[in-house]
Amino acid sequence: MENAGKLIVFSAPSGSGKTTLVKHLLHQPDLNLDFSVSATSREARGEEVHGKDYYFLSIDDFKNHIHKEEFLEYEEVYKDNFYGTLKSELYRIWQQGKHVIFDIDVIGGLNIKRQFPEQTLAVFVKPPSKEILEQRLRSRKTESEEKIQMRLAKAEEELSKAKLFDVVIENNDLEKTKQEVYQLVLDFIHKS
Image (tube, rainbow, N blue to C red; front, side, top):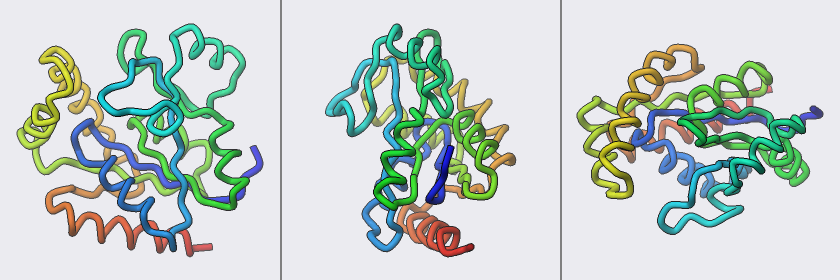
């Protein structure tokens, strides 16, 4: 795959604040970033928009893209609940002359880092504690108790992989964390 720009990967357990940080970075014009929209087989939640938040695909469509090897990476996160990055997303963003930023699960983030080790900055966003993580998940009021418990169990596994990332940032003070990730990404983009 011909490459043009840098890849900035943000991964974390659900509820750690990675999406908020990614949105903040996307609003910094000097970083020249564009968001890699992931594909998923899950249903849209709340105000999510197809093509902006995710590409919402049926399970069959998702599996068809897998069969055609059209994914850079993908994972069955939960039973029949797939997430992945279409190769076409990278081409779309690189054709604009921009760098790609990902808000992606831990396995997917590590897969991208493995494929593009030199041009990827892999950032793991760690919650201050498991208790705070649970509070954040519950305060969303978007998921059932069963889903919350699944996410908390998955968080244990994801936290154990933090050391495999280039940088681990604890999201304790959001404004301070925003400044920290901005500087981190700026330095990485300007590094040759």
